[in-house]
Image (cartoon, rainbow, N blue to C red):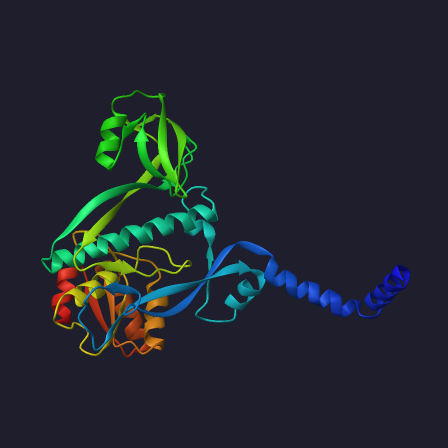
Amino acid sequence: MIKKIKKHLINNIKNNYKFYLGLIFILLLFIIKLDYYIYSPGSLVDLTDRIEVENSYDSSGSFNLTYVTARPGNIANILLSKIIPSWDLVDLDSVRVENESEEDIVSRDKVYLKETSYDAIIAAFNAANMKYSIDSIDLTITFVYDLANTNLKVGDIIRKINNVEINTFDELRKEIEKYKEKDKITLEVLRHDKLIECYSVLQKEKDRLIIGVTLAELKNITTNPKVNYIFKDNESGSSRGLMCALDIYNKITEFDLTKGKIISGTGSIDENGKVGPIDGVKYKLLGAVKNNADIFIVPSKNYEEAIKLKNKYNYNIEIIEADTLTNVIEKLK
């Protein structure tokens, strides 16, 4: 029985080898991944149901995130990027810091997503002159330098250094100053919801002792009314901050900034409401145009590029320059 099956399979392969070779070739086009991304225009993400605010005011229009679609650098997508004008081939090294892995890049962008989301709440409540409280701060690692002598990882939340509780960057800096170069310190960190012990050998750079990491302060906030984000697993990055702040502000104040329009945009934001520059303006603007947005809000440092693109391709969309949250609110009013 087994011999008959084996013979049948061999004959089938001999008779259909061209088909099987073609199938293997097609599979390899999608399986083999090179060190590239393919960037292309994204769509709009309506924040109406992505940010929940208790007892929020209604809007006649909407605030929308814009994003860049990043496809994996397999051979098929790379070939398509040579044909489709709006698809661009991007070397992974251009978005990588030093020799970090793709996993580290994703983890770092997840941290930035949380950071800008918390800062957006603070900025919105400040603009609305409403109270909030910062209950705690998660001092979170966003990058580990090649020079670092440590087993810390991106996403780790520092809790203690040599049994001394650490809550902010200033507290970490003051604690490190108690030691000297090449001292080995023990750090208690929260990793994937578990407390573990890590180490770092202190080094000196420009007359300062360093662990060899960059950090973000993720603030845990209590507000009234409560604000709740609904994230998806594939979402990351800091460029949603401005639009989140605008949507929250619109939901906690009576005046409707949207006036029935589809308002799109991009830009990072800090807790003081300052808007920061972003990447991928051409993809985000084209995504907004294709999805019939009425307005595209863009950071000051990206404004000139957006205007040039609008004029070059005759896009039918209003572009608003954003330097601070309060200025954007006044322009929309």
